[in-house]
Length: 396
Image (cartoon, rainbow, N blue to C red; front, side):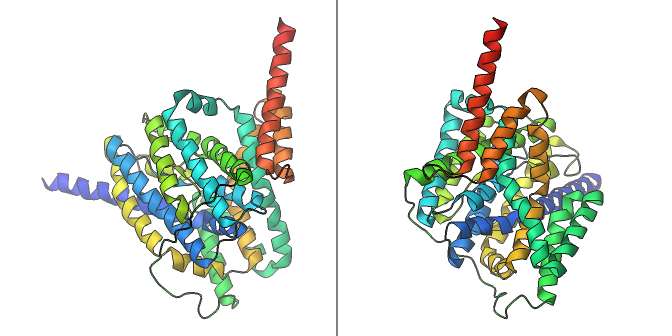
């Protein structure tokens, strides 16, 4: 009996430590990007804190529901590419209309879970085009790092050096470490005001969503597509690679409904985790794959606590100098950008199509009030279809 108890204690230690790592990596890596997205649509300090808290609470609950129901380590996350999309494509979109676009994106996710052909259609978006749209969205953020280094060299340059040094040794912790270093360096340089670190429980702030057609087409539809292509599909792949058969429709339904419920409080998108999922789905979490779903319990508790303290985190991080925020956000997106560029160039026959998608998306062009991510996807799909129709006619 003592051996069994010891094994259980060891199992719970792995479960809790792996979950804590996933929470730290997931939150610290891109919370600054979430704040950038919130500022882009005019969210005030209370709304920014509500946005972060709504995401944390939504992720905690949806992860628990899916993991407990299906006995798999199905954890959810916020859409990092979606946040980058909002931060770069939301020019002229007010906060209430942005929430309406988020609500529509969640509804589309729910519909995708209900309608099998739509789910299959999204899955059939050519990988190079989806990857190119993602890379185009992230590209402008990465471009901000050199300018930030010039604007604030004493703070930013050491972070860049530390980031790439960590990428060579412990890449998983590179972003959380530079976030911590950035905070320490900002504090030592006197960037924080005396009131920036007050503590308190975060309150969710309700804002009635507005439904502006331009915002829906410019933000809602691309948010849905980029989240499906760059978050949900890789999330399912991580689970399959770990030996699980994820419930695709149920996962889309739960995350879609969760996104809709939390949208009026600021949440832009809740979806399957990919990078952080790989932390909790392996044998380091628990040697028995059938027991790894227990990560749902510490995940629920830890993200619930982070959500309650979200206002304090937002207040602290919001006191950072602008160039430092830009640098950390750009470095945090370096790995996803590299992955997107690699995937878009993987198939030689599709490089031209992917490049067109990337260039249109990265251009930041706005047409009829609709952002470049949507037009990049349209341009890529049209060229892809035209090329394949032409090749098909030539073969006949």
